[in-house]
Image 1 (cartoon, one colour):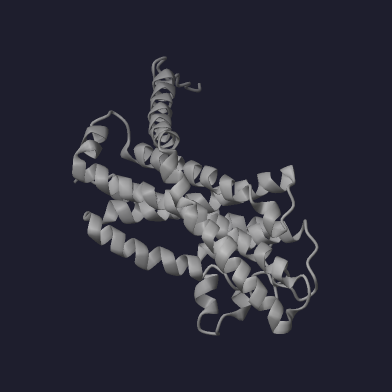
Image 2 (tube, one colour):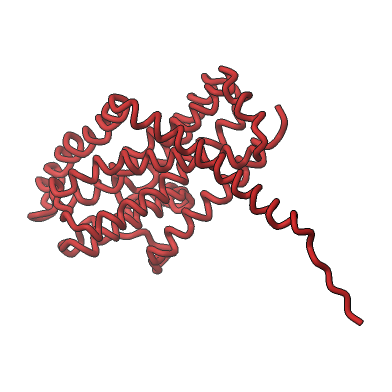
Length: 290
């Protein structure tokens, strides 16, 4: 005679109700980040000045220097297209950093304490904040993406969608990293110092401004261990697949593991895995009572 166990009628609805409540709380935190972005357009515009200056001042200057060095005709425009993914990443960096800074400020102002008394998991609040920051960072990058035609990247709907998706993955990685630092560091001054020490090398060692193949032997392994390297390379290869690039041009030098080039899907998978691990560490640290 077999026994059958029937769950109480209230168990499954209770679980579903709990999940719905967690999702609703996460959505409200995400919406708060989006409202801050929509209501402060000046901040978004100012944050775009640096990446656009890199693209149209430093990029144009270096592309002319590259052409004058005898690299061949058309290579100047090729370098601007090479630089474009790094500029997209730079545009997304400031909103991603703002997430970590807001966590530190909310803790000091007492607003974080008011959020934590809500009957939801702390990790839900953190995930909502990180998703909101990644969304804002991706929206900010859209403004730079509108300049694609000026650097030789064609305006194609499919290309734009893929680049935005790849930028969203990179934005989530940067947001998760800043969130981990924010829940670990208590003082604003210390947070800003650590942030500048960590994020600047990550950006410069991502191959955003020069290919990994041109790095010294001691620097290349560090770049290959950098998750942002694969995000930049994925966007660069996405662009290269849709525009003609002369042989030996900068766009023809993807990231290599020895003699093998990892596929774009694997590169994005590595960035997603990094984001998941960092978010898990941040959630575990954030769940600890203060």
